[in-house]
View 1 (cartoon, rainbow, N blue to C red):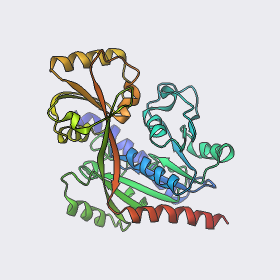
View 2 (cartoon, helix red, strand yellow):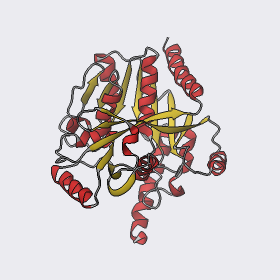
View 3 (tube, rainbow, N blue to C red):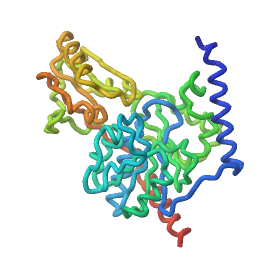
View 4 (cartoon, one colour):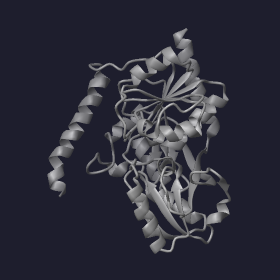
Length: 350
């Protein structure tokens, strides 16, 4: 089967390398916004824990007194009639889940003071926010491959458990770009560093790629549990000893499953789907039937899935939502880099 993918895969790799070369040589020009831009993105396909980091950075900058705008593409939106969607104006949510996509909708809840704009053309969307909403800094969500927009700080997120996607570009590995794209990063955040991984090998590969930027290790903590739909807080010990079913559609569901079992749950059922899966009532009915057949007492899901599942009837099956927050090993260094990028942009503008 891999033989049939060889030619399309190599053509894709050639296209990616050509695009990178055209921007590096100046034949294609990135555009610059007046507002400082901080990009947070991946080098690989699949979940790397980027969204909790985006929420962390946005929350920190808001606490420091900055008006934050988040520019995101909004993958897997079910309603794409509008090219530009203002998900949140920093005071209230202005769009539906279908118009927003799951991650922007979740960010609007987690960071309610951030202005969140969804759309493919993020330079034009940034200009629109500059004209219609006061912003001191933009976060470019999933922006590592978005060459069209210049950024003042380029944050690359690597998953400690699979940082380099097997070293091959898709479809043979999980890399979106060749490994030399690592050199575009201004800082690297290694997520899930509390999981077993080979730190020496990771740092050796970075050194071999001549990467000399700061490398900061990050973790994610389970910070709470709440009831789906009502948002009523629940004690984390609720899951201890319970027969639990897990429901999620993520890029890396294994990490979530491990979080649940670490809380003392007895895992009896799993329903995992493709990232950004749009649930239906039929899906939910099947999940409940299968969970009951496995004698599950309760279902547990993620905050990202919860925004899509809360509209459905679980026919009396209890559902809890696990709350996750990012924790930074060298928080001071990251915050210093963020503030320095914003200050430098303002100085250059003046």
